[in-house]
Image 1 (cartoon, one colour):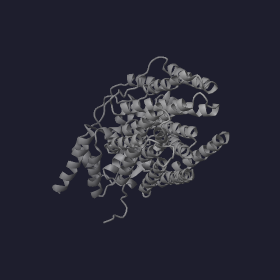
Image 2 (cartoon, rainbow over the protein chains, first blue to last red):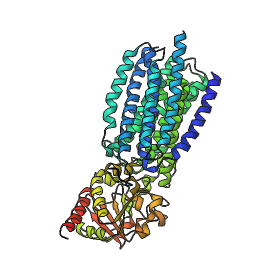
Image 3 (tube, rainbow over the protein chains, first blue to last red):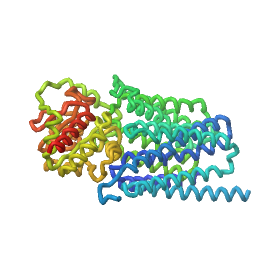
Image 4 (cartoon, rainbow over the protein chains, first blue to last red):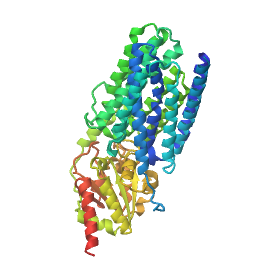
Length: 98
Length: 466
């Protein structure tokens, strides 16, 4: 258990550094889609909620898990849809495709 | 038993691939050309992760899981199809939903595990629910202010910072007690309720112009709380997704607060509100020059280089499509039209870019502040549509101004400045803009959408009569 937490800390640190390096390179043009995309990805928390609701270890856990799934799924679905809608709008004025 | 092990390996493989896809997803977002591939990578990763989780052998009850997934989808689809002008409040609302999920899962985990919770576990669990609950109410407040259900004007009162710090301190103290004595289960509800109140109090004093930073900061908190949840559940996938979201929000908060020359603490703990009122009180009447759409159209038509500086006012007036018509009609006449986008124009980072892209303006015409400022001395006309503070030259010159030191778009260096504005009434921020009183400035009074529409009509009318 102790070792798990320690390796989790390493993972967190490395992911934070990767996040900084990758996201620094995102063009300011796309900062709004960036926020909606990270929001959708962050809703991966839904996996924790699914296990809570599905395992049904207690009624409280199942109820809270079910509400949590609804909240996170709406972020997954809504977040991906709106990010893609926004990105489809960005067009270059360069050589026109006919 | 063997089947379980097989399924577990499969689940781990799904999570592993999903993690890689999430990182690629953000990497591909670096340029508009590859960005849509990034969304696809994210979607595939998410589908793998959710699909893999459903194989989890501990799941005994699929009924509610499926119902919840369907219900979430039903709510998510309209939230993904809101108007582009509503994107800031949608984003705030989704931060609230994300934080709600994390808080509920954290609460359930506490009651499943208590009273035998090791100190480190209780520490991350406390962080999860504190960050989750304050982000939940804070984001709801922000969404309410952006949607104008709640008053946008900052509400300040004496001792506000004291109250806020006291609330946060109380939550931390309770967390410390619970780490030492996890069997004190009746303390746990306070660990949620106090941060819920703190979230409300934190956003009450924040005004509309600070929203880009606040939204980014809430984004960061939502990410960190999800990462804390990853520690609790020992899920590397969740830790990584949370860390990516957290660093994204953090970077955006740094960019936006730099763009206002303010620190986080200054944004969150105010002090700005008070100065604003005194600055507004010192305002005096001075003469300005105004112009009609015909005059404006004449000047624009004879220019060779025009820079448009949009702001929140353009979004409010929904003027972006008329701006596109103006862009077309000027470009057709051979006028070089570009757009200067300030990092905090609008209500969230990148807000103006999305609106202009929606109106089909090519993204290579949308230039960042640092790239446009070098062009402005060679610019014939700077046309400001619904932007104010981000063009205020006193940020460069007047040390007494509350926005002194804030980087601005140097529109006053252009040969002619045109400002589309409803009236001379002090704007939301209440800071006077000396730009309006310059000899080279023409005030175009009216609704942004109508005024730009009238200019376009004058320009095309000119075409028709030779």
